[in-house]
Amino acid sequence: MSASYYDSWFPLGRPLKRVAVPLLVFFASLLISTSLFILLGLIGIRSHFFMLLPDIKVMGKMSKPFLTLLGITIFLTIISLYAFMR
Image (cartoon, rainbow, N blue to C red; front, side, top):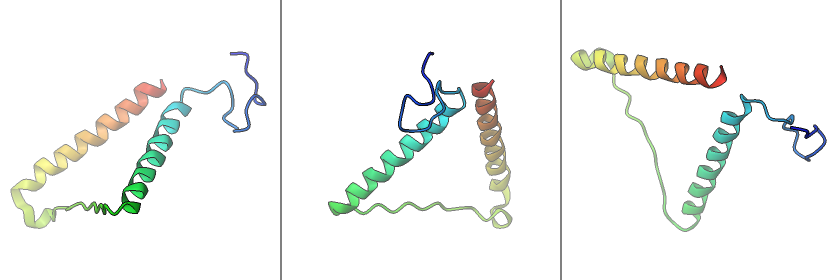
């Protein structure tokens, strides 16, 4: 708790705020996964990710569950962020 801003070469704003923790976790996981896929590409393993998005007009009965699940996912993400930052 007695650390100052000048205790490190990287400007994190010490002591760390509670909001900075999920950002650091996000960037750390992003960099780790990127380096993993670069390493896999260097040794010859090619990974291709794609997402099939449904055409809501064509799907008919399936569009309501898809939109419901999308709404629930967005709601839970917002609630999780609010609970963490509170």
